[in-house]
Image (cartoon, rainbow, N blue to C red; front, top):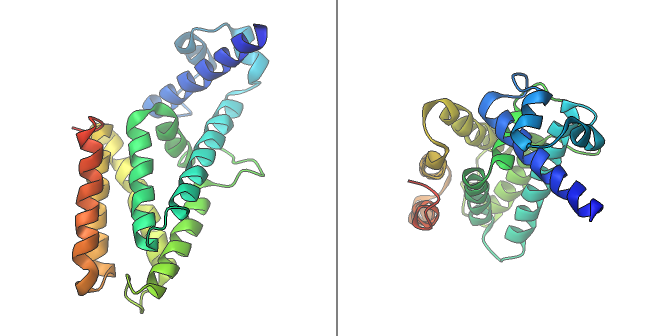
Length: 218
């Protein structure tokens, strides 16, 4: 019973911290505010987390675990490489709409928070994934053969992250899937040969609509 209570307190603390980090930023959130928001005692918080940085690291670990699970799922479903890359970005966007931990993980990745080994920076993981998928997409003839894969992968990650960072101050998080669809419509027109373009433009619209249909976005 005591172990279950500690587990519940840990989940409540991480979720509360994620919500506050997402809404106010890491530097502007205090441990006292997290205690109050999580409805736990200071003793319970310090039992699991010695410092605010420990909470941030726990959130980033959860984000990394979720992102890697999404990548494994997409790799196992037989999608083309470009479709797997697109579906992964929409899945991450949907998670951000659904809960504070993915949103906070992204915000922490852009803050001055040290990423402790063996955890890797999420942008490094995303860049490697995008590079791998775009390299395969070139081989599958879904992307122009003369692109600079490294430059496109870097631009894609920056585009995706920037969409969320800018959107945080401009519009509700529920608009994120729509912005991701807009991002892909622009990217596809520059990357995909004309005779394959319609398939992926339709897919971007479809994936955004699927999220909206289940009530996750306005």
